[in-house]
Image (cartoon, rainbow, N blue to C red; front, side, top):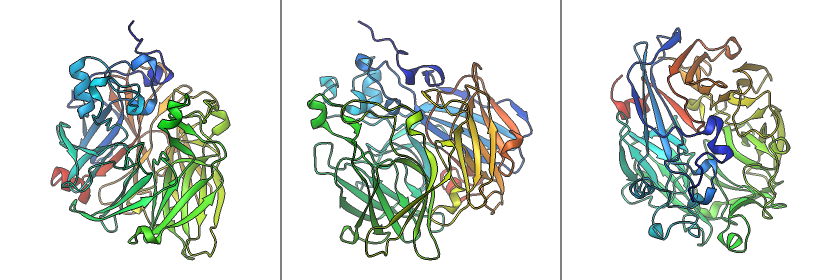
Length: 484
């Protein structure tokens, strides 16, 4: 019997897949596109090619679809392409889904046993002259920056052949890409992560293996000028639990959050473990060191999660697990583990971001998408965007209307701009019941005034994950696209 394609909360509404690729060489612009805004806006997200097996699905499980918006000379061109991983090609040839959710071998078709599960659906970045589509369970996948054609898995000359982070950090002060690979020995092997330092030229300068307590779902990590921090939150993947009738991926009640802290140029022998109350934390805004040498991490965190059930299969609601913007202060030099937490902003926030050029150094502006009108059961999106001053507490908010779905709000520096809010902020949004989506461009200093312009996309872009903007005068853009 055929499985209905859209019979799942994350396959309906804003999430419903469109399942096609398009080229739009000259999109319609409403309002005034700033003349000093030029570069590329790229976004990745799930776009399942086939219905899930046996009706089982998760938002994190769809095939990666990359969108690229080239902005230059007051015009915008758009292109979107699936990331053609081995998984994608095998299923396309078969005409059906072959892999179980998250690649679960017990629910996958026998024909793909031993094959790589790689959706490449979570983030898309530029570094070392390459455009890379990322997920944390597999190697990076290289795309042609202009055509978005898939060039294949990028393993850094055979150095990084297992997993790659969906949230590597580019230190704009050194040009380095700091990366981790989680569960590098597979779901049944010893829990261990790999820490990588990749130079501006794409060469691997450092690779360190670090043992961790369990197969945690590690979506992000922290980097400062001198330290790296690996958060091990209570969510894990456990095939033994699944074989005993429980959920494969679950929040484990009562398990503390553990933070492994290591000098940025250190080794596994230098790791110190700090322990804190159970926290759900997938995204940070920025992390740096204060005058006292303490690590300051501004994070979106909650005391639990609705994304996954607990170890007994019980799922909490969104209202019970609202994320807020919190500041974690960690003293790596203390004789005993020491962590302090304070809530900076209580808005229901999703993807906080800084001016990326300030990553690893102090920043005060947090950009994010937030939920203003609905407090529970949100499978359909965040309806507003926010700039928040972490020093004064001032909020700068724009609401797209009830039922809207706004994606990650990112800072886009103007050409030649150097200051933290000297530029623009951008997000992909689908307003409720509209046939298309839009790329909204704001003055970064005045989000509440509404978009300076909206770039019309003549179809609905399904809700996705992470995006980035690379200004045409930046070294990262020039490395991938050449001179502006």
